Image (tube, helix red, strand yellow):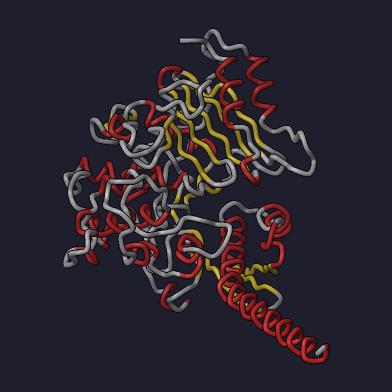
Length: 458
């Protein structure tokens, strides 16, 4: 009897071991290419665009969780970065002039390198005053408590717990059209482009707005996605506004703690917008708010179709970045050549401040209307199905008092690990904070509140 029981127990344990091995293999099959893809892409962009060392990238961007398992290397010969995990799942990202870095996936490297590049533009010397140029005024607006403001900015760089570094890299305070405070972390400076993560969504929204101004897009119209034109499954009813407000209804999972639609899109798919558009509906368009990077990349594909292939690569620079004096900003494309409208914009802190100032000024810049009349108002109009009215056109809102101590008219571009461009019209303020703070440890509300307390009340 004991022998029979022991045999059954051994078989049971064997089955558990086999099941565990199958699970581990399946997880590794999905996860390792994502880990190495993320590591290659991040290393490539941070090195070739921001000029950072591989050592700093490995220590900060790749220093925690499963990412530390990746081995990375940079090649100056072909401007690329590679990564693997224990020698497996090797991935490569390549740098191209004017486009930044692209992860090689779904399309051969040769084919990607044959894609066209943006036109080279010779810009005049930057000698002008802010905001068109980078020269700052010698005097500050009246009423600013300068010592209190300096302390508030410095607080954003303090590590209260050495085991949980804040890693603030840049903070800029714009008040009444002027930069009134600016600070950078060790190793960072005003000339260094830094990654947006999801602040790119807000840039994508601005590009949609420009095309609305041109009469090429209508927010209330059905989204002009080729894959949806002949279907009768509900996707043909998704509007551009649904995509802007994150209520498309698509069955897309936005979760970065495990392999999901979002991680597959960013690190396994050549055509990110096309990948998302192929998803079926989970609910009726416009019926539920669900934040999805896939929606933003569908918008990027719509922009590409509306602009046309001939002008597409130059469109963001010619219609948005260059008029604002944003010399550093660029959008990185996926392997299919569409800008990754959800995640991959690089710019200096000052250029991010310029972007915020455009919205503070209702879409006007230097006497020129960049965004259409009413676009900023539409942007800050809460999505009616967002539980707290917390989202507009690819911007987060405080209209529903998500942050009770902060002004109701505050709205902001928000990126992973604490990237912020904050616009507060009632206080004539734009704030920029860039960094790499894990696990939502940066106290956004306290940061904004401390800054506002040092500025004149309105």
